[in-house]
Length: 462
Image (cartoon, rainbow, N blue to C red; front, side, top):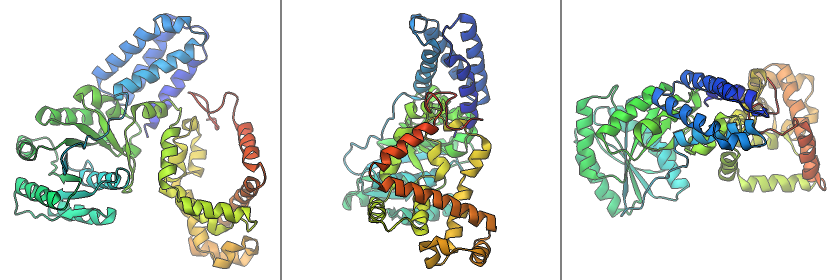
């Protein structure tokens, strides 16, 4: 996410972060580089102008020159202004209304609106413990109604039926009446998308908005369209009283222009971001955490939250007891760990949130990609139960059979067994007395001087 912007900014700020003295010249030179980075990231020009002006105003002020580490203070100023551009803090949904709280979803066709309805309903059901009903008022695409019905079933929330012969207002008023009778907390309304902003579409959604008076009107927009996303959001905001934005497809957006432009151009907060195709891939948008990620400082808070929500505690406790009792760590346990990792966005999804990981070389990124995790899981699935429990019996002919069964090479099987042996040793150390402390000390020894944080830091060099 935002790799190009992150790479440019971390390289630029690395040059200035170690400076013992800042002059107007080197501040000017750095700001020129920052401006170029933002232009390449497709950030809107008014946003860039204001951002640079604010950084310059703070940087040439007394704060930096009086500091013992002016270079680091400059980086903090950039971080603070990135946060300010994106809204400073996460703004949660305001669902304090007489149930059902109606959430209206708007957006262009292809922006991921219907999928976002399902993702949001799952989020509200699981994280906020809300009883959620979803309805489609898209009478122009029968496939959209069917798509929402299928997704609702997948996330286990109730779907209110509708069809293309009904009027959108009639569909939603019926859904509201049903939600009241059945004591639903939230009703999420999917509306028709268009390929571009047009007056007919705006007129229809304005009428719908006036009739149902939603507590939240969210605009879903594709992050990969850059500052166009911000301009489209502004056009919608001029016609509808938007309360927030859902920025979709951020996992495919290497630039970050939309994230940095939307708040400035619309005055409305980004409330959520879609971070993948999976139905659980929706995260609250925290400007401070995103700014930290952009500057290569990681996002440990989001990683901790993810682990809290997605790690199967019962399985984790069973594994800990198994290792402690001396029964060891086998390939079935290893496969369980891979599956858990996959549920958290894979190895790269987790590494992306660790400080300094933006500086990993492409070669190392390839070795940690989702393809590798999927391949490892396929190899373990090709083994018999006995082989998974006693990996030491896997020799020549067994390796050939496992490779053929998983569509891999014998060297891939060897590589997996080697990684498993290393993991097994680590688990033994952890189960030994004081093992966790020993392991943390050895990991600390692997880190470069100054740890992993900050631009230019990191466990792996380029």
